[in-house]
Length: 155
Image (cartoon, rainbow, N blue to C red; front, side, top):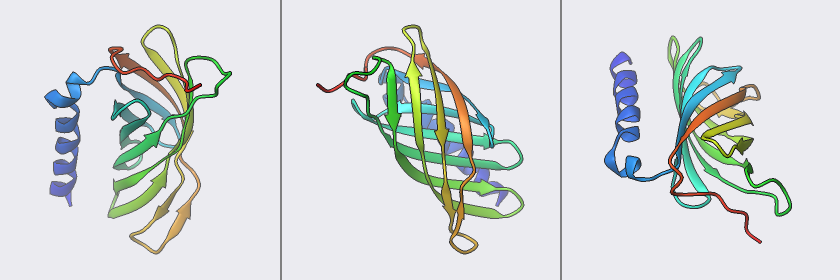
């Protein structure tokens, strides 16, 4: 189990440092406080969809990867975005746990390279029955790298 967690951890950071991902501007990296503390990133896959990986390091070590779809209000502030998402979570506490989790949140991107957000990641634990977990609320602060891919409101 330790080998699997090490392989997944190395793969996660190898993906973040790949040249193809570095070439995509406007990805973010930061931290998330709340029920679970995590180091996270956002990687744009286009104008609206993105990959939102997280490494949980509080009372349990885990990796999550969420596919988020970004929305904005037509009459709202330019930097305000809402997103629903979905993805797997793998936890390596004392034994292995696999969750299918949602990722629902709101975030604001300032004119300077900072994005703050609030989200909720409810999930179903699959490994020991199909148990619903409603916790995992969090506040995030991420540094934004580059401005190549920007989120625009659709009129």
